[in-house]
Every structure is written in C-alpha cells, then in structure tokens.
Image (cartoon, rainbow, N blue to C red; front, side, top):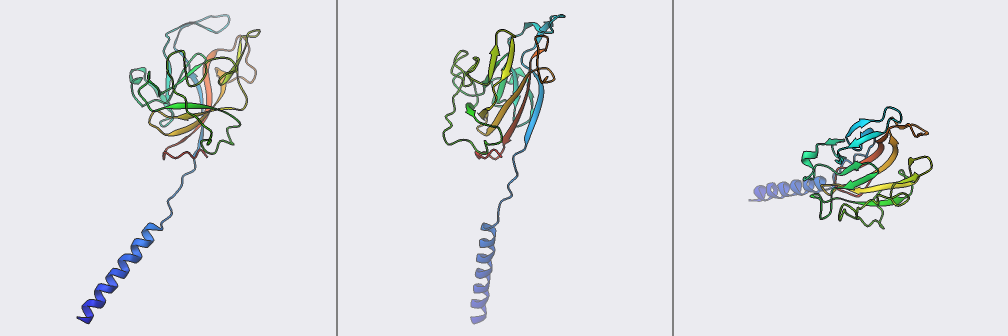
Length: 211
C-alpha cells in the first residue's frame, strides 16, 4: 500500500510540474513588418490623353486591396470581407459600415508612421455610411491629401497615417506616399495620376500592436 501511495504521489507531482511549465511557456512574438506597395491603379481607365498622360475615362470601380494577403482583390468579391481598403481617384474606402459587408473602419491619425506602434487609445473608428459619407474624408485637407488647383497636383499630407480596422476585424496602419505612377519625387501636370504607392503594417494576431 505504501509503494502504491508513493507512486501515485510521484505521478501527481510530475503532472503538476509539467502543467506549470506548460503554462509558463512564453509565446513567440513575431514583429509586424512594414511593406511598400507600388502603382496600384485607382480606377481602370478606358484611354489616356497622349499629351498629358491623364486618364480619358474610367469604369467607376474601386481597386480593392487585401492588407492580409498583400494583393488586389477582384471586384467580384466586393461583397465579402476579403478586402480591406479600396482606391478610386483620390477616394479611399474601407470594408465596413451599412453599405459594406466587412467589419472594417478607419481613423485618420496625425503623426508619423513610425510612432504609431499601437492603435491609439483616442482612436474612434469611423465606417463608410454612404457613398458621400466615408470614414476617410474624400476632400482636400480633410483626409490624406492636399489638392493644388493651380498646378492640378495631389500631394499626400505629411504626418497623416490611416489606422485601419480590416474587413475581418484585424488592425493595420497605412501611409500614402504618392498618387502618381512610379512615385515621382516632384510630380508635374504630365505625371500619370491615379496610381497609389503606400506603405503599411498589418497585425495578423488580432491585437492592436502595430510595430
């Protein structure tokens, strides 16, 4: 009986020890990696002016983008949560709100891309309520860009970061770097517009950490 008792006691002790060690295991944290995306066409054009290089006509469709998969999503999947943000001209939409099917939203943060290491405590995520009431204001000075009517140039506002809640409820940060093809340092009236270059960081684990 004593031998049996000691065997049972030893078994219980070992089980408790292994259970504690298992609970104390430190999870591996993978740093969020920033990625740069170039020349995302912000609307399919039906032609180009040979003199100015500007689009002659458009389809009115958005270029839908998945931050999780780092790729353009077909418009046939617009009624899904496969995409997170969409581009058409200077307008950027998110996959969330009564006119969308995803869980997304956006918060326009004033500050640098690097300093947004987590979703700000002050962040209030807006959603697209209608085609004219968008989470990211589609107006010069109100969202991500300034428009110069004298030069007809669209310029990203320095220190504006789009904090995005994705279509599937995760988080990311996006900084628009250029609105022109091949991201010229100084775009001119002949620079071909409606081509986005941006960098972003996506957090796949669902937490609000963005670094």
